[in-house]
Length: 263
Image 1 (cartoon, rainbow, N blue to C red):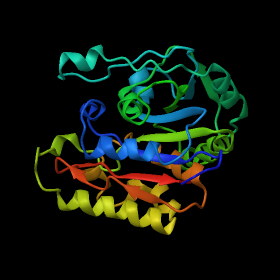
Image 2: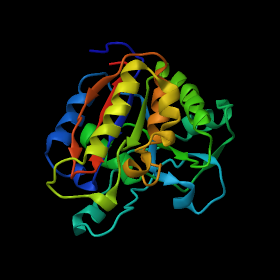
Image 3: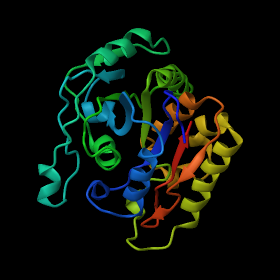
Image 4: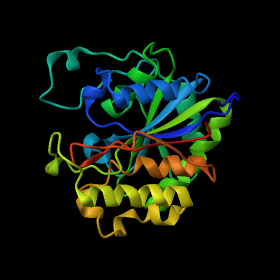
């Protein structure tokens, strides 16, 4: 168990918003993970669900600085209680200002409007149900060169020594068009997931940065945003050893793979 102040860097396959409310193998693993290291002072989340396209804004990287971030229900077709749920963690405007001032890879803009999307709160509601840890998000600029995402992750990684947990939230295989409920994993989903695991074990970060060149990338990821948070996490992790949990392929085409560094 990590008994030091330095926090881990973690990538979580978050899957459906249902995981915020269910007691299943994924939520149980997230709870167990949170109990395996000291409580963070703050949490910085890079979520697949805060992108330029979502914001309708120009190409840029932003950091959320709201003191009391709202719970964003960025999905549809779920039960009413999903939309009534509120994860009332405080923000951390001071940390947001520090990130904006210290990051040199790309300009980081302050955003006062964004709250916590389900890529953040669906996981944190299980890891830290008390919602008593300050949380803020970093946006995804999908047009940013992947090497710069990795480099920005390296800059964010310095915060780990100050008690800040770096949490990437997405899915390394995410093809909602091909979902088969209770179906066996597609071979292409398993193969791409194994490519990711193998590259993580070998610390082959160039292969992960260039993931879109993989012959199965288009099947595994029709759009890239769910993979991209992993690049920030491996940047923050430097050369640490990966620890895997939740390695299942869910509904045939959705990888729930999670990887942690610094435990």
